[in-house]
Structures are given as C-alpha cells and as structure tokens.
Amino acid sequence: MDLMKSVQVSASGMAAQSQRMQVISENIANADSLVTPEGGPYRRKLITFEESIDRATGMSKVNVKHIKKDYNTPLNREYNPHHPLADDKGFLAKPNVSTLIENVDMRSASRAYEANMSAIESAKEMMVRSIDMLR
Picture 1: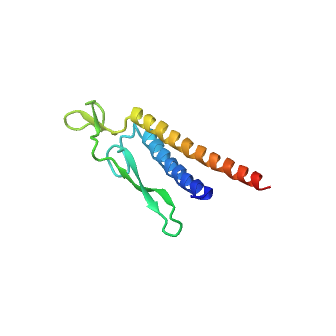
Picture 2: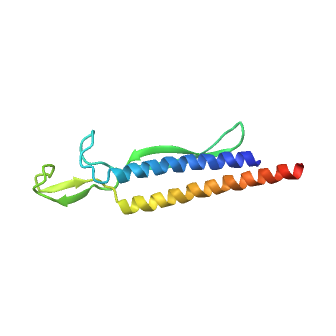
Picture 3: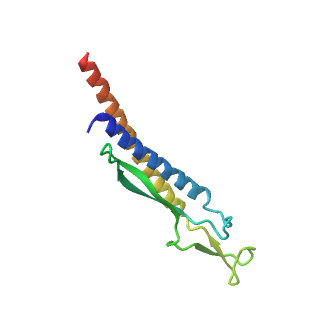
C-alpha cells in the first residue's frame, strides 16, 4: 500500500472520530434537557461505523453507518412531585445521558483521532525522507 493510501485511510478515520465527538458533545450539552421538539426528554444519540472498500482503489475507509437515538437504555427517573413535568406518580423523566460515560467516550474518540493524526504525520515524514533520498 502506498503512503498516500495510508494517509487517506487515516483521514477517513479522523473524519469518523470527529463526527463521533460531535455526537458526544451534543449528548453532553443536552444531558439536562427535559423537553425536546419531539416531546419528552432528550435521548442519548449513538453513532456506529462501518468499513467500506473503494473498488477502484482497493482502499478501505471508515464511514458513519448510523446516528440514532438510544431507545434501549431507559430514561432516568427522579421523584419530584412538585415539578410541572412530573407524571401522576410524581416522577420526572430525565435524559438517559450519563456525563461520565460521555466523557469516557470523548476521551476514546480523541485518542483515536490523535492516533490517526500520528499515522498521517509518520507517512508525511516517510514521504519527505523518500524525496530527500532521491535527490
């Protein structure tokens, strides 16, 4: 695999991790949102990736497959009978976002982004050294 292809693969990984960090940021920003335009509290968004292969170049890339709401994790409930959004039993539905989990995910995405950046820097150095050797 030539160096430019490796740079393109790493660049696709960086783009995917960048989107992941955007989704995580949105989750953190809405961790306390009790009402959304759809109604009800905010639901955590999850991002999934897939690998695709460009038939023309044979190069594999990382793409975002889905960004969807997490309906598998139940909403958090808090007993607060005086809140205007509380149900008839006095419970308030709150977002299913854990800022602790989101921060761990953000760190993981950031590290993956940095790893792809390092791979690009290494490929760039190899290209420069190859050109220097040819002089």
